Length: 210
Image (cartoon, rainbow, N blue to C red; front, side, top):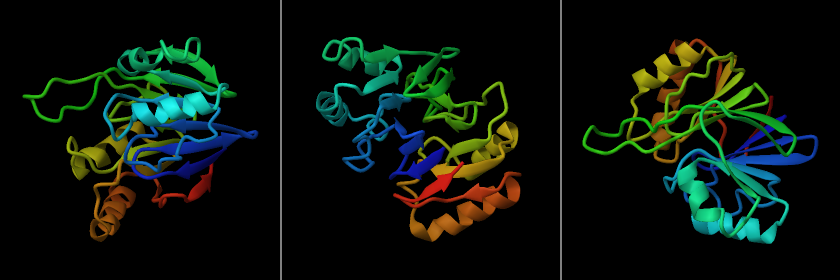
């Protein structure tokens, strides 16, 4: 499997000539989901989900399907019958040849005064876990943990403890569009030295074989 990092929280996974894209939101490149066989969306926030862009992708490619939670699926399912699938915690499914498990239910707390929305994470082929906007710990081993390194709802100590709890083989940055280049080496250092797993930072468009 090859993982290509797109801007912010979006990644493209390619295996056996088929492509799975996770969270092609408004912070990512406009073409982040182009050519995808399957798309997964963790929640409704704009940096993870762009209704306009997803509609354009689904209209352009009749074979592309989407798996997501109800809040997103309800906005798209009527326009694309049979191609938009609602999933939740504990569900399993196959998407474009990838086996996917769903973990988690709620977005991380941004502030106690703000209501929490739903959020799900996706474990792909029992190997790569994208948690969306939460620090969800799957109930099974994870090879590659996609780590939301910087967000309004987290701090670096929480991210380090999250990596320790999941105990993956490796970590790769996501959710990093708000992180200034000046601070990136510091985050890299903390995750590598304190997290307990080798850490890899990929720039937008860079790939790694998993």
